[in-house]
Image (tube, rainbow, N blue to C red; front, side):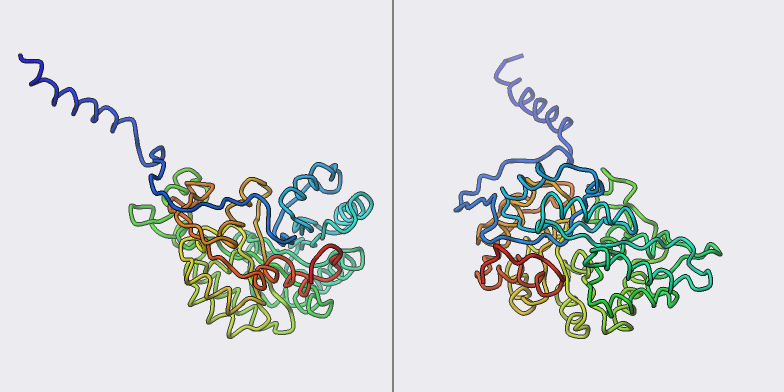
Length: 360
């Protein structure tokens, strides 16, 4: 057979072989788009990260941590994983002794024993003691609503009235409650070709939930909102934009209704980075009610946050494909709003942060 006639066959065979080796998980082409780029590795202003977790803060050497913080221009880190009692005191003592002014620690609640007579009052008393020992806020994990059960084995709802003494005490102490309820709604949706988080759920199958596991997504969110409405004298920080970063109109309605609620954008910057016009309008309207949060200590990932907030760059990659396979766009927030998001709002909402080093 003529070799020229074989060329198309060889070409198509080669392409077919390449196609067999490349799937959605591995297909990650470099963009050929040529646009101005302004990558940022250091925030324009010193900032406070209100959503971080340092479980070993009681015993760790904080020097290495603060060196990395300084590279990012992170002035203060809020460690939400303080626990309570002796564990909390050990963390606070380490921070105060070795790196004063650089760390704030939030307390946590031990939900064991919900349903016992006087449990709520005892939990509130423990929170009072923890604040006296240096805690400056309360963090509630998503286990409340998911896996916390009372002494009878029943699921404890986020708005369970037996927990009311805790929220009331937080209001009296004038400390914020940063609360994480549920997860992205897509985790409850069918795992098919219409699910936007398909790749994430394939890679992390433990994140997938059945439609009623343990209850529908909306049930958990409604429980959280009832909690906010019931305790109007308590300041709540809704983690992850309350899981409405992809529906800012809905979140806007909630913030208008609930003046005691503010938000932070830990782990959801990808949602904001794909809607820069809508997000910028939201940040402008609610500039006094948005806090900077990241949710995991991976220093290299902060660059995406800075770039979305500070630049007007177009079509740049997110740092984790399985989390967001789409490109980012910068909001280009003005300095006045950046300062509020980076530190001014946190200084107002979280007590006892050292103000040294923050510009006016």
